[in-house]
Image (cartoon, rainbow, N blue to C red; front, side):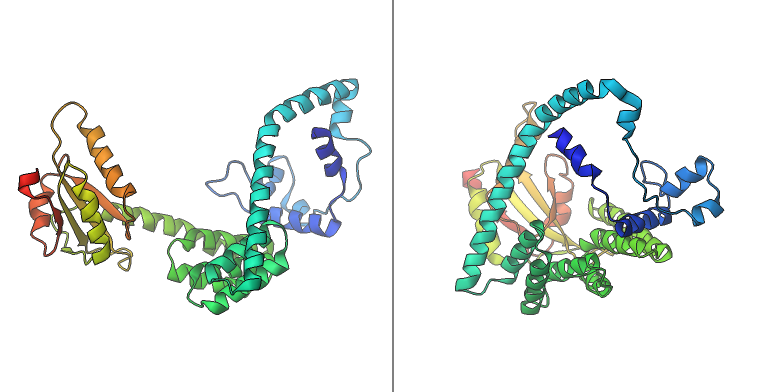
Length: 348
């Protein structure tokens, strides 16, 4: 197994491909989150001059023997057997799991292909099919299916990003506009979008433009941190608004809460936020009946778990409880419609 990998690695990489890799590596700069210096910085550190780097060429001549043969000599066969044994022991379970996963994905691919022959697939099913084609290196089919998904649902942000990413992998620059659109419409795509575009630009030798996306990546991370700070707590100056939650969801929540005896009252409100205002900030306050017994926190977490596993919550939210945030109750309960569930006193 290990020896076969070594045999595969002996096959030469095409000179054109290897040259592209070398050019890209030399253009990359060391960043503060790198685990080691860039190739250029390492070469400069061992004495290469900037002038020598500018004319650095790919060595196409293959060595007569490997470094292992040169330095290990007659010990190499024994060491190979030892490494092979260790490699087999460590890899067999992982490879077995990978094989089973591959068979599962092939079954899913066949099922979607068969379904597509009987009826039109939904945009989400098309994207799943595209991803499976890509997983099995059928890139042309993956691209065509992703394009069909976006044509059927032009507002599908995932399809837009998926198609743009594949375009850049095919060195088609129009993919940038697709990813930019997805990043503007959905915050979750900012980080992956910046990474994909940055990688494309570095590969094209456009490091200055790539640096712009690096900056956007880190600025986005800072922005998310600021958003979290703004939302994670209630401050005296915060503006609290009615939540306007879906009625059907509230009905399910009330039925669930009725069966959790520790829940006396549930309040849901919304906070006015400045960072990402299009993404509402919801707070859920739980008035709980938990007696002091040394395991209050454990009981509280159990209640929260029951309320979140028994019904699908249609929005992200922060949870406060009377156990730790009793002072919030008076402020929240005066908001119109804040109380969405209140247990009958006779059942408490």
